[in-house]
Image (cartoon, rainbow, N blue to C red):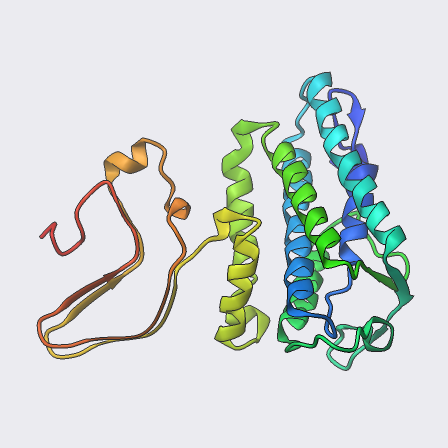
Length: 284
């Protein structure tokens, strides 16, 4: 089914999806902005990815739905579109050029002067956005401009509003929650160091930022884990069979970071969450 044919309960939604995604794609990643702005811009980019998850899933499953579900979806998308348009109208809009690496260069127009931070996070946002748009159908960028909302309080409010609306869309069809989770995990794979060609420290920071708007992407990060002598080390979550049957998902566990962990002698180390049972060592 083509994106242009996406409708639920007779309510056409394709155009609204495309307008919302186009507005989000054009948000400046903030290479010359404060760290807090960069975090919010990255979160908006990932919210756009979640929005596209709904679009792709509904399209592939050819959901018919009821008229009420169609109207509810339209209401959520309209709210997102209107808030994005309001933010764009009060923000800055400017033409963009390209850097040598193919990312957007808005340094002259976007320079806010005082509060600077490392450009690595904004660079990851640009890369991630490019990966997403390369695999997206029916949502082209028709002209070369970006926009930025410099008022971080307003941008933060926008992130919260869009988050609520996206959650509302995802909740419309509970039967497809598993598919949405699977797509979210695939998107998380795009943020691995090897795919982004960025230092692991940067990717770790990115994971923390996006997990604030999507708890499904919370994850453990393991670095420099070493075991010597007779020491044993196990990493990763353990969910018992009983807990799994009750509906607990591995992604529900909290996110932890482990770095420079050394086990010696006869020590035993387990790094992760244990749900509904004993540790791997106790089960022996």
